[in-house]
Structure formats: C-alpha cells, structure tokens
Length: 473
Image (cartoon, rainbow, N blue to C red; front, side):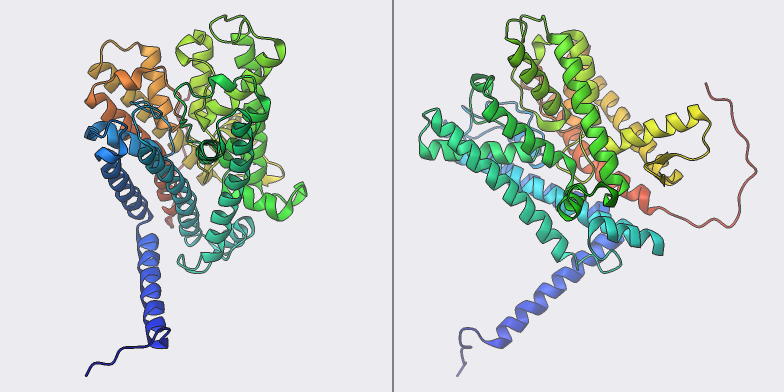
C-alpha cells in the first residue's frame, strides 16, 4: 500500500529546495560561461510567448487573428520597451491584448534590469581584486560571490521598481479620475501609463495619446519624473538610495550619468524650444508657459520615453536632426532606456577634451578612466552607428517611397528603443517591419551583451610590439 506524504512534509520541502538550488546552479554556470547566450535566450523566449498571445483572436478588438508580423512587431516593441506601433494600441487591441502588452513591458523592463545586474556581476568575476572591491562598493553587493547568489540585489531592484511604478500609478489614477474617466478606467489608465513611463516604453491606451492633456502639468510632470528615474539605471538608483545627497560618496558612474543626463535635458529643452517656438504646426500658437512645458516634455521623452504631444512629421527639419541625436544618446547604462547610453557620450567627450588639452590620461571627478573603458565606448558607438546606417539603407531599399529623414528617424527610434515615429512604421510592408524588429532587438539586447562581451575579454599579454603612431586627421 502506497503511503501519502502529509501536507507540509519536510521531505517535499527539501526536494523543492534541492530543485531550486539546481536551477540556480544551472543559471550560474550559463551566466558565467556565456552571458550573451543567456541574454539572447531569455529575450527570444519572452518575445515568442507574447507574439503567440497577441496573434490570437482574443487579443484583437475585432476577434480576428492578428498577422504574424504585426503581432511580432508589437511583442518585440513591448518586451524591448520601445513603444513603436504598426497598429493602434487603443483600437486594434482588446482589453486582453492591451493587458498582454503592458505585462510584456513590465516583464521586459524587469528582465532588462535583472539581466543587466547579472551581466554586471559576470564582468566583475573577471576583474582583479581592486576592480571587485570597486564593483562591490558601487553595486552594494558581493561581487566576488556566485552569480546565482544575487538574490538581495535583485530583490532591491524589483522592489524599488514596483514601488516607484505603484506611486506613479496612484497619482495618475487620481488625475484621470478627475477627468471623468471613472474609477476602474482611471485605474487601468494610471497603471498602464505608469508602467509605460517608468520602463521608457511610450505606449498609450488613448487613441489620441496625451494630446488632450498637453497643457496639464500635473499629469505631464509625473510622467517625466517616472521616465527620468527609469532612465537612470539601477546602479545609480541604488547609490542614491544608499547615500542620497552625500555627493562625495557617489561613484564616478553615478556622477557621469546624472551630470550628462541633466545637461542633455537642459540643452534639449532649449534647442527644441528655440527651433519650434514659431512653428504654428507644433507650439507656435501656444502661451509661453505651454511652450516651455512642451519643450521640456519633448527633451525628456526623446531620449527614450517615447511619449509625444505633437506630430513628429510636423517638426522643423533642424528639430528632427537634434531629436535624432538625443534619441541616439539615450539614457543611463543598466536602465530601461535605450541608445548608446549617456556614459558612453560622457567618456567620448572626456577623451576628446583630454586630447585637446594634451592630457595623457582621461580624468573626471578626481578619477582616471581606463583605456579599456574608452575602447568599449568607441566600439558601442561604432556598433550603434553601423546598425542605424544598415537599417536606414534597408528601409529605403524595401520602401522607396520613404524619405531619407524619415528612414533615419525611424531607424534611430527603433535602435534606441524610443518609440517616436513619423508614421513610417505603419506604412512599411512586412519586410520593412522585420528590419525594425531586428533594430529594436539589437538595440536592446545587442548593446548590453556586446559591451559585456568586450568588457570580459581581458587577456594577459607578456610582450608588446614597438609603438608607432599613424597620421590621424
């Protein structure tokens, strides 16, 4: 006669514990041996799952099947927290479809932060003793332990993200409720926008987006704050939570991220406002206060947020050019923002400044930046520019009716996972949509894994070749 183990049997608990330990060991080995395969595998599985859900009739408002390329485009855009769309979020998808989309954004955002933390620890395992100590100080976790033993770090990252999104959702719910949307509809829109903003996705459940609220500072400022916090990255957020305003205790990464982000926000606000000040198609007929609000909102959102208050096709050509530049720059490393990252911009600028001054070392805030970091920054910049160029050429070849400025804008928006669009995405044939899918995927996963792979490739060389400097310029 077979005996049945009673509820709460210690043997059953021990079996689950052993199974969990085996899973952690497997993840540990995979992350240590090939972080790139781990990253690609996780995102490919997630994209395939959400693609299948979005393609089913229950996800569409009409109850019909959604084409594979449209479902995949939306799934990639959501999981990679981009925000580009080829069908209307408000009218094409049912409530279930919108729910699947925002869950994909939430999971994708947490997955990016988790992946970045695991890959960061993978890099620290290859560092020397001094590098490990610096990494441990900056990440507030033991960098010398196993990758599977990062539970405390991930709990902090996930808990902080959920709390910030919860606070933002509560405020937005109250704000939408004051517009007469009703409690449940206001709650849904508050949750949707909070997740979309913090994760730098830019999806909107309204058919006309945020245009009806374009002068409501009490709605727009929380969205900007949520997006800005999400774009800083978990290493910066953890340092701020630990040391707050004790700037002397901030590490170099935090200082570079905050200073560069602040300069880009201020510079983008001034440039966008001056360029569009008299453009009647955008903000030319608004009051001074509304013009300033629009300029600030555009500056914050173009760096990966994806929300817009004006049509991108109505922008002045000069505005489109530096919008391209802001999108390409993106947000902070190990964040939900895209682009080549502000620290890459900062390191490149500091290297140029050091060369102009004739300084032998690149320095910032009393710290020396190693040459290996500069090589990684150059590689990430070159990779990003190459992908955008190839994507632009492919779009023009597939869809000759597209103009060069629109093709460049759409390619950068996809690669930098911004989500702003001139409307070209919806006009493209399936082949063009697959090009943007590839750009979104490479822009999100490629830059993280590429930079990590370069950082981990440290080889000892017992000899040096004679130095000879070629002519540059």
